[in-house]
Amino acid sequence: MKKTVCFDDVLLVPQFSAIESRSEIDISSVLRPDTLTLGVPIISSPMDTVTEQHMARAMEDIGGLGVIHRYNSAEQQVMIVKKARDIGTVHVAAAIGVGSAHLERAAALYDVGVRILCVDIAHGHHILMKKMLYDLREIFRDAVHIMAGNVATLTAFNDLADWGADSIRVGIGGGSICSTRTQTGHGMPTLESIISCASSDRNAKLIADGGLRTSGDIVKALAAGADFVMLGSMLAGHAETPGDAIFINGQKRKVYRGMASKDAQIEWRGRTSSVEGVSSTVSYRGGVAEKLHEIKTGIRSGLSYTGARNLCEFRSKALFIEQSSSGATEGLTHINL
Ligand code: IMP
Image (cartoon, rainbow, N blue to C red; front, side):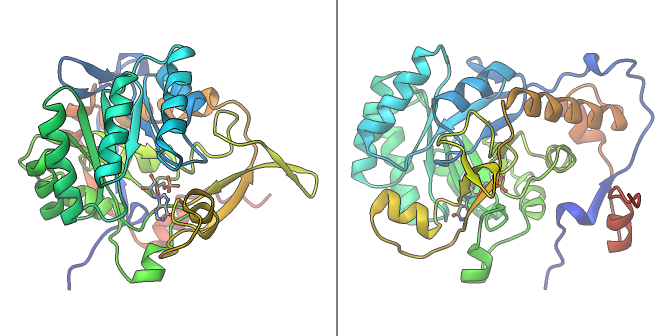
C-alpha cells in the first residue's frame, strides 16, 4: 500500500537567500494566459458561507479571485454576480453544477459578464463532468476559462484537462467541514494529491483545495506544485462572508458549513442525499482584508526562506523533508502560559 504525506508530515528546508526585502518577491500566478494573472494565488471557495459579492470584491482588492457559489436559483446567482459588478468587481467567477439546467445557468452567467465558470461537484472524476466539460467547450469555445473539480489523483487531473478544464481543484475529503472520508471511506491527503497532480504534463492549472489551515500550509501547497490555493475556513467568519452574524452565549459568531451538510442541503434543495459535511459556527473575525494581508505576507516570507523570487523559482528550489510527529509538536507554539 502506498504511504502518503499530509501537511503536518513535512517541512520545507530553509535555504540561502539573496533577497534583501520581501517586497522583491513576486507571488503572482497566471490563471488565464494573456487575460488574467492573479497578484496573489488565492481563490475563495464557492460555498454559501464564503463567497457572494462582498467576498468576491475583497478577493479582487487583494489580487485574488472569488467564486460565487451555486447553491441558489440561477436568477439569484445572476443577481449576486450583477451586484458584484456593481460594486466594481472586474473578474467574477461563478460556480455551476452538471446537467442541462446548469448549461442554461452558465449561459445566464455568461450574459452578465462571467468569463470564469467553475464546474463544482464533489467527485469530479465522473462521466457527468466529462459531458459537462464537452458541452461547455462546444458552446463557449475559448470565451470562458473553465475551472473544474474536485479530484484527488493524477489520472483524474489528466482526464479533466483532456475533457477541457483549464484549471482543476485538487483535494477530496480534506476540507475542515468535510466528512466524506468518515462517511464513504474515500479521499486522499490534500498534499499527496497536489504532489501527484503536479507531475501532470497537461497545461491545466492546479488549485489546491481543502484542509489549508495556515499560511504555512499554503506555502507547502505552492511548493508542492499548486498554482493557486482555494480557501474556505481561513476566510469563514469574516464580515464579507454571506449571512448575518449571530450571538451564541454572548459571543459574536457566523455560520460556516459544508455544502453537503444536512443544513445546507435542506436549505438549497429541500432534502438530503448523502450527508458528507458538517455545519458549524466560527468566531466573527471582522473585515477580511487584514487576514488576506497576513496570508500574503506569510507566503512572501515562505518564499524568502527558500531564497525564491517567484512561485516558479520556488517550486524548483523547494526542498521537502518528512518530520516525525514529535517534530510537528515541536513546531507548534509551546510556551506554557
Ligand atoms: P477548508 O478550506 O478546509 O474549509 O475546505 C473548503 C473546501 O471543502 C471547499 O473548497 C470544498 O472543496 C470542500 N467542501 C465544501 N463543502 C463540503 C462538504 O460538505 N463536504 C466535503 N467537502 C466540502
